[in-house]
Image (cartoon, rainbow, N blue to C red):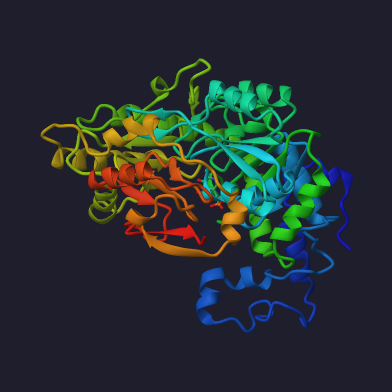
Length: 501
Ligand SMILES: Cc1ncc(COP(=O)(O)O)c(C=O)c1O
């Protein structure tokens, strides 16, 4: 039996899950157990090519050497404790269903049906999913929108204070920190306000698993007062896609309830390769996280500075951040390099395709007016220089003759966006019978879906909210400008799904 030893726990330079897997695979026991491929023996050639013989040999679960994700006692407990130590958490839980799963567990593990929860209006769909699972009642807070970039930033302290004053009985606030584009709200001040009001601070830190490893980057959420933070280890560090961590930062939350919630939402046969990859990503950061992140920060600053020398391109840096209670971005994670294309005659999706097919370069995302590039601990100077050369060439070929880009107005108008009335909570809307109706006939009906323009990605409608003539006309106006809709089942919104009355 693999036993957790105290000295092992203190050793960041071991990988207990991989160690346990190797131990079973090396034992040579004849397999009369799951998985059906029996350590690769029955696996298809393509699967063997993909996962490798050794990967399949170790891809087992439920052996005595291994551990139970839901009630960890052995190698998973040790690996989680090592992760908690490295990230400075009171406790850490491994999640094999992405940060979506971690956020679902975070909300279902801290909220109860009927609880009010304050959330940014542009919350990722996983937060809305968590609200549906918990049966909570969302109170949306408008994030700051950067008019120049056309993207949503974080929540300002003043907006949070206003929401707390209007909803003093709310159970928690969910913050997104950093945003996809790397902008960070004043989480420390928000944490103080939230805790003073007796609420919990739950953080979607999907894009912040690396922050801990560089003093030149913003502090991570639990260091600023978050009670729980969900991090996508897979997005920015070295674990496999689908693997995340839930860090518990305070004793305000009931850890056993969080674990119970994660248990409801995750498999009883978690893939050991995924779990081992989380443990190994932690080991890698313990071994060389500081050096690697120092290089990633250096490269990203170099990239940003060089992009800003290219005519037609602009990469926002710390000048886009400002302090004060109305600011939704007080600092920036430099490793997220956004390249604004307002000076070019191509939009974001077109530029993404050009880079992909003419230069063999793939960005993380494109929106109407920019591209986002992630510099991680895997990058080096040569790849950054290749990207720069491609951007330079593309910019020279597609320089705009001038004029204001489409989409600018939509971001500018976000402050004047119609605010719908919430008629049902998202859970009731989710379980209700729905039907599609032509958008022009939907005034007065309750939306069953989310409708947003991206960017800035702040929804005009969320499930359970009333559709009005004003909203319909707003949607049509910005569609006519060529803005991209996100959320609805019918992407052009000829019809919208509404709750059957
Ligand atoms: C802000 C934010 N939160 C949560 C998620 C969900 O993360 P995952 O893809 O690991 O489920 C994402 C994914 O892109 C995200 O951007």
